[in-house]
Amino acid sequence: MARPRPVPREHPAMVKVRAKNENIAKYIKHLRGSPFTREGTAFWPLDQFTQRRIRDGDVTIVEQEEQKAAKAEGHDGREGREGGSARAHGQQRTETTRHEA
Figure 1 (cartoon, one colour):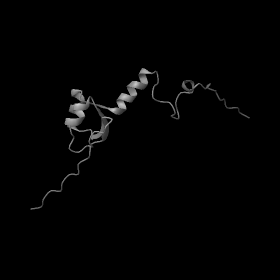
Figure 2 (cartoon, helix red, strand yellow):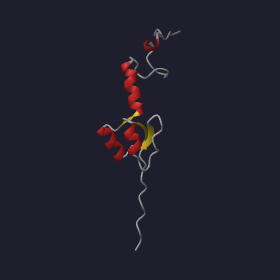
Figure 3 (tube, one colour):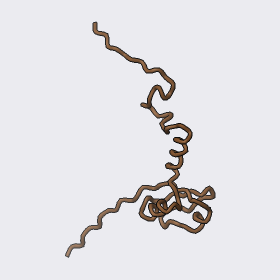
Figure 4 (cartoon, one colour):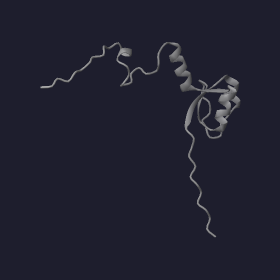
C-alpha cells in the first residue's frame, strides 16, 4: 500500500513584537521565535500562540505601534513613497493638455 505524500505546510509570516513589560519578556518564550532583546522586542511567527498573546495584551506588533504613532503626529505614513498626492508633498498639481496639430 502506497503511503500518501505529506502536504507541504506554509510557514506563518514573521512579525516583530514588543513585550508589554519586563516580566513578559522574561517569562514568555516562543518555541519558534527569537528571544526578547534588551529593548523588549522579538521576531515571532504570526501563529495561534502569537495571536493569543496579542489578544491578551502581553505583546504588540511593532509596525502597528509605529503606524499609530505616525497618525497621532499627523502623518499618514506615506511620506517618501512615489505616487502619493502632490498636494501632500507641497507641490502644485499641473494639468497637461494635448494639443492637436
